[in-house]
Length: 113
Image (tube, rainbow, N blue to C red; front, side, top):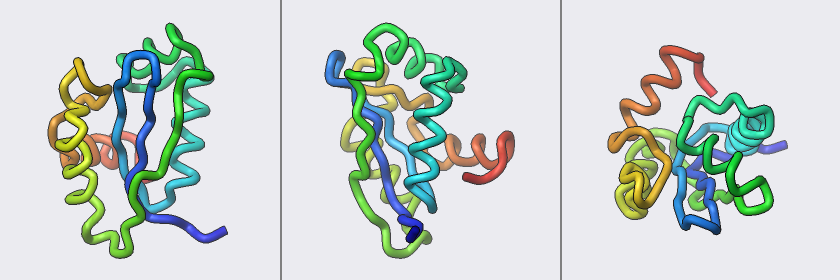
């Protein structure tokens, strides 16, 4: 399977909120999100609570942009976070306004994905 590099969105059709993330292996990363949410152990409590409340049926997992050069991955993730205002709890589930700090936390604490 070819590894896709890019930006993904987890979207809830009930509250119209989104979570934006990026990965150098989109299929694996989205699978990890689904697995953690299904098991009730996702590190993003806001997203997990919505999943528990609304149910899996009301969430979609989408690849919103393929990024050809991973050098641009964080910049493109930031552009999507800003565009959808995912850092604002009224619009999204992202914990941080800045993709760099969100990603740094993921790499330092859990290891790269």
